[in-house]
Length: 336
Image (tube, rainbow, N blue to C red):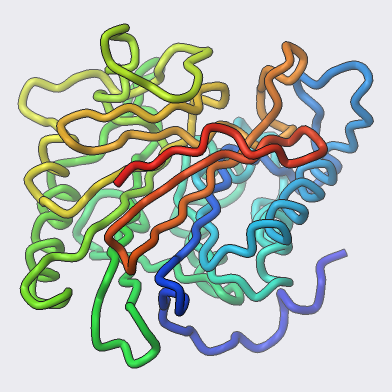
C-alpha cells in the first residue's frame, strides 16, 4: 500500500544549501529495476533470504538512515523494462517512497529501460515532477531527451553564493537494436552555455565546481581498459557505452565547459570504478537493485555510491556502501 505522503499536497520546493560545516552529501542509487509487483531476485546467493523489491527497499532505507544525504539521485533504470512492469506509475511510487518519507530532496534520471512499459519518458517525467520533494525539471523543450537541467547548491540559506552545480542529462536509450544512443551535441551546447552563465554567480568571478549525472557511460569510461590508467574499483563486465563518434566527444564538451570535476553513471551493474580522463573523474555507481542482474552469487554485493562535497564546493570525496548487512564502507577516495 502506498503511504499517504505520496498523495498529500506537495511541500514547497526548498533550495539546496550546504551544511554549516561546508559539506553537501549525495547518495546515488542506480539500476534498481523496480516493478509494481513483488519483483524478482536475480543473481543472489542461495542462502540469501530475498524478498524481491522489498529487499532492495530495506537496503535503501538503511542506507538513507545511515548516510542522511542532502540529495538522492536515482541513476536510471529505476524501474524494470522490456514490458515487465504493468503499472510504471506504481513502480515509480515504490522506488521514491523511502526518500519521500524522509523528506529528502531527490532527482531521477532516465535509463534505457524506464520507458519500455506503459508510460513514455514524458509521462514518467510528469509523474516524477508531481511527487513530493522531487527536484526534477523538464529542461529546454528544444533539446533531445527529457530532463536536461541543472541544480544550484548555495553556500548558505541567504542564497548569496552559488557554490556547486549539478547537471543532469538524458543519455537516451537504444539507437539501434544493438547500439546505445549518445548524449547529443545540442545537449552539450546547452550545458556549455549554462556553465558560462554561472561564471558570475559563484564566488566572485570564479565558476562553481560541478558534477554531472546520467545513466549510460560515455565513451571515455573505456579508459579503464588501459591497464596504465589508475582506477579504484572493479570492472567486471563490458563497458556498454555508445560507440565512439568521430565528430562528437562528450568528455571534450565537459572539459570545455570547465566546471565539471566528476561524473556519475550507472547502466553496467557490476562496474563500480572511478578513473580520471582529461582532468575529470568518471565514476560508476554499481547496481543496487535485486531485480537487476548482479554478481552477489560470486561474492560481489550490490552497492551504491555516496558523494560528499566539502569546503563549500572546493573538495569532493566519494565512497561506496555495500549491501552486505553491515553497509560496509568501500573504496573511500578523494577526487578533488
